[in-house]
Image 1 (tube, rainbow, N blue to C red):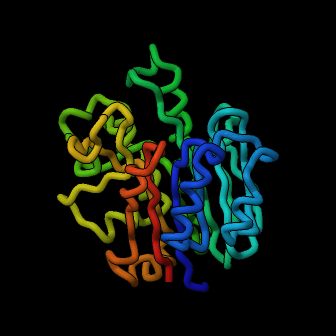
Image 2: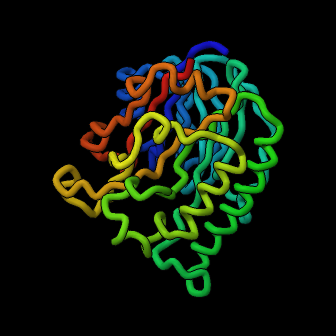
Length: 269
């Protein structure tokens, strides 16, 4: 495979933040950008802006006003058959191939506020999605090949992926049923969590900071919700640059009208 730099970012409306994407693309110069929560239909996607940035190839799975994922690339994209992992059929996932590598781009449901499926249908939806996601990944992992899985998985799986493990055990995104489910999906597929391959615990890693925190840097109550996983065949390519090849662009959280997530990049190969 050719060496490339990939990025994942929950942009929280691609049209609202297209200037931020352009700023990031100029700074990081990724070859592939996987976006989540684009909040637009396919015909509303700002394709010209991406072409002007140097990304003439793109695949968009959109939905009116919410959800949606998009992958843009400097190299041609082959669209692969999308699997049906979302129980509601929402625009939360697609699969493409770029430079011989399969890219899976996900936006897992957030799950609402109350971690009880009896009273919170949004949490039930998230757990249903997670079950289907795990079953698909296990099947896909057995097939082999070069796979990169990225996205806003809306789960911070490890103790040091949140600002306070004890205080967040009953908060959606870090409840045991979610963290155990996500790790089970990953390990059954055989995929590697690149961030934790390169940055061992107990060092904290965050990619998301709530809008509720006025001074997010001072409070630093973050969570690692955005992930890059790779198949075993790509372990060497994903780790060859060491920690310097993996970057969390937290400065983007200080930009005007920011997303609550920041971009994450990986040099692959």
